[in-house]
Length: 476
Image 1 (cartoon, rainbow, N blue to C red):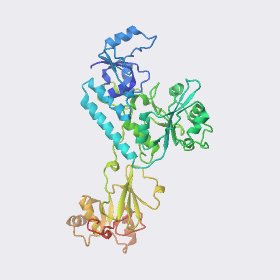
Image 2 (cartoon, rainbow, N blue to C red; image 1 turned 45 degrees about the vertical axis):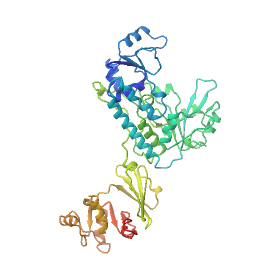
Image 3 (cartoon, rainbow, N blue to C red; image 1 turned 180 degrees about the horizontal axis):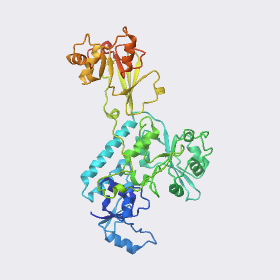
Image 4 (cartoon, one colour; image 1 turned 180 degrees about the vertical axis):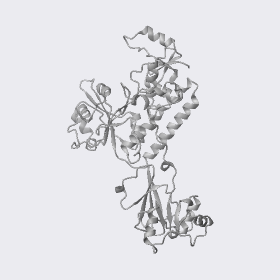
């Protein structure tokens, strides 16, 4: 296909991911977030697609349909030969919906790129889903809504399948009570008495335009009273009230536009809410904390996209790459005196012989709270500057090819020719003994990130490497 009309925003997001936005000739951009598409609209490259609703210009609409190769439409107009029914939102499950990018690609002979994009999305999604399971969370999450157009007004606890899947995959507990629809605000509030996090999905047309929907408005919508931390409701006590309106266009929410195509980003957004220790550095795209007054971002028109035909998604940060802790792991299969427990963003190593713990976290991440591991020693890894008190540890370092991390070591009894050469070149300086000059030793310890020693020590930088006391050849 060389030119198309598009009747809904979800399709456009997939086209952007495939670099096919220039194929769009007609589309109503009123509720579009994409700065690229709106820029194309301002230049006339994309013209307004006349609506099929009563009162619209049916003649103009037909002329537009005749002018393109196909019309991508969210309804089921099977009788019209140019209409392609695109029903991603009806497919259950986050990845089910995202794979519709391959459906779109078939019409443009772009299957290879679509498969690459989807495989990347699915891989990141699965990686982060597995990461969310590394830590145990009991946070109960409720997706809530209100139907103001009914009489009486209905308060709803939404248990839609794909939202449930997102919640579970992010490490949360989906709230699924026996009764999900209420006509009494008090009964609705009482039903939420065990909920830790709520996601408000209520439609607020005026606030979408003004971007000013606040905590007091949420409370007014659902009848929560009192509307502060003195409430008996857990989510008010801990300020865990969220909406999906953090990223907007001039007239609508990007949640309905690009979240379907990017479930890997959605699951990370939710992980940062449900399990913030796992995703401390993730910048949320769609979820906004109303209780803390988090601001809305309105996507500007992006003039950089006017001549772009490459695949692009500038308004949404991609999902983070899979952290190494999610996948590459070592365990003590034979050794008795040490072990390790992996978490999503850090790992805890035990020297069980001396009952000492070491919390290891990546230098580019935020360390876990120290109160979680009282008495433990914290190290940012990878360690790049070491002092070594014994020769056995140095041998292991040589196996890894990281002997250059040794800055201080007494080489008097060392066999390794490599280490002795490094000593002769001045790359390894003699490590002052604990029985020697305490001032020199203190300065050397200050100059490194860790000290590999053979016994327990109160020194916060010391790591007890007690392989020689572990029984059995393979234990050691």
